[in-house]
Amino acid sequence: MLDVFTEEVEVLLKDGIANLYWYKADLHKAWLRSGVDANIRAAIVRLRTDDGQELSKRKQMDALYEQLRTANYNRRLEVSRNFVRILVEQGAFTPQNEKHRVEVAERCSLKLRELIRIQERDRDLRDSIRATAARTQSDTYDVNIKQLQSRFSDAHSLPPQKKGYALEAIFTELMQISGLPVDEPFRIEGEQLDGAIKYDGHYYLLELKWTAERADPKEIGHFFYKVEGKLQARGIFISMNGFTDGAISTLPKGKELKILLLDGNHLANVIYGIYKFSDLLEHAVRQASLKGEIYCAHNLKG
Image (cartoon, rainbow, N blue to C red; front, side):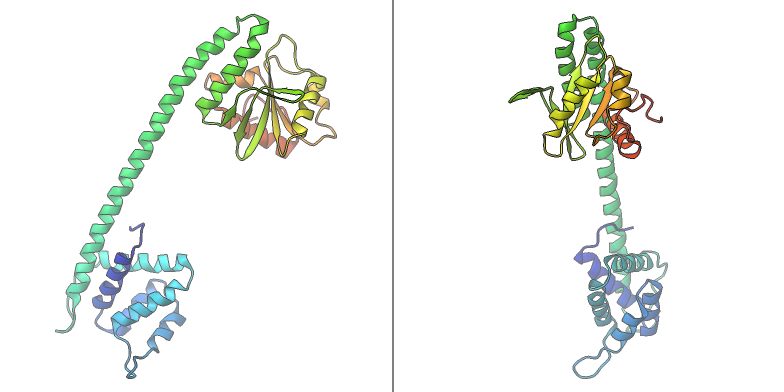
């Protein structure tokens, strides 16, 4: 069926439907079957030319579309699609009178079938291009993430003082692979931030920690205040070795939720292909929004 209704299509429908029927009563029945409101049909039947004559079938089709243009768009689309269906599914074009120009309706039917074929071909081509692009994007992601897996594995054997820098570089590349806008680490007066990402219209400031110790409430609280001082910002604190029990159980109470807590297992699950970072972030935001939990389970179904 046609997806795009141009002026050419409208003319074909007017000419085709007007000449398919010899009797105006049959034309009007086709209107009603196609979804034209009975009040519109009645109003058009009452229209007259300057010399008092009833409008021709073609002029009535013009008047119908003038009415449809002022109506709900979906109704006009429904009526037009039904008109197309009538013409392209018409099996025989037999004149009912020597003046019946049914061959005009047949030509319109053939042209509409051609336009449908062209639109279907173009739609198939667009779908093929999109599918190819999606496969290419997926293949590129898979290649890049495998390279990142090797770097991530090597980073575990780095000296403690170098792990933090490695984590910053790995996370930045992960965001680039994931198609998320990312700012690298930056400093503002009195503060050092490990970067920022943008997701779903929100900026998330980053705190990336890879030390032997787990992050405690004091560290998270300090990051919270960094985030709190920024316009509509949110924060993501990634502690590779996790958080102390106190950090998770006490921090959210009595505070506006502005930060999310992730650990090394979350990051490893993304890097090793268990889920993508956008899926993880969507899940974390959902848990925080619906349950008030700033630290989500590693299993996204949990």
